[in-house]
Amino acid sequence: MWGFASKEEIQQLEQNTKQSFASVRADTQNVYDWLNFLYRQNQELQQSIDAQNALLQRTMTPEQVRHIIDSHYSFEPILERVRAMENRIENIARLSGTVGNIERQQHDVFEQLKKLHSQVETLGNDRRQTHISREPGNVGNVTEPRLGTTSALAEKMVKMAVRNSKDMIKQSILNLIRMHGQVSGVALRESIVVEQGLCSKSSFYRMLEELEDSDEITVVDEGKEKRYFWSAARAKKHARDD
Image (cartoon, rainbow, N blue to C red; front, side, top):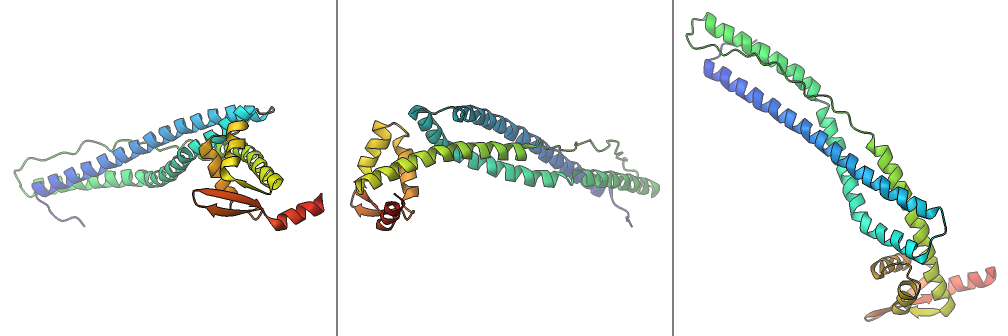
C-alpha cells in the first residue's frame, strides 16, 4: 500500500523515474549502434572472403599465395575483435530484452504517482499538483541482424583459403629439410621468401614456429640461428614408404 508523501518526495520520485528510463533508452540506442557497426564489419569480411574464394577457383601463383597468407596473419586481430564484439552485442541484446517489462513497470509507477498527487490534494495540501502526463515512450524491440551465421560462414571460408595455402608452404619447408637432411632457418627463409616469394618474412617465421612442434623435424638452437634436422624416425618411415 502506498502511504502519503510530500510534494518534494513525489517530485524526487518523478525525477528518478525519468532518469532511469532515459538510461534505458540510451542503452537501447547503444544496442542499435553496435549491431549496425557489426553488420558493416561483416559486410567487409564477406567482400574479402569472396575475393579470396575466387582466387581458389583457379591455380594460384606465388604472388597470390603470398597475398592470402600475409592477409591472414594481418587479419587475425580483426577477427578476434569482431568475435569479441559479437559476444558483447549478445550480452547487450539480452539486457535489452528486459526493456518491455521495464516499460510496463514505468506505466504502473506513473499511475501510482498520480494517486499520490490526488492524496496530497485531498488532505488540503495547498501545494501545486504536479501532473504526470507523459506516457512511456516506445523504446522499440531490438531486432538483431542475423550476423552470427553469416560471420561464422565468412570465417570458415577464410580458414579454408588460409589452410590450403599454409599447408602448401609448410610442405615445401618440410621437403627442403628432408632433401638436405639439415638446413638453417636462414636458408629456408631464402628459398621460401626470396626465391619463391610465397610469403613475407614475418609470415614465414610464424609458420616455421608452428612446424617446430611437429615430430617430423628436430630443432637445434645455435645461438642467433636455428638449424632444422629431418627426424630419423620420420626418415625411416619415408624410406619404407618409398
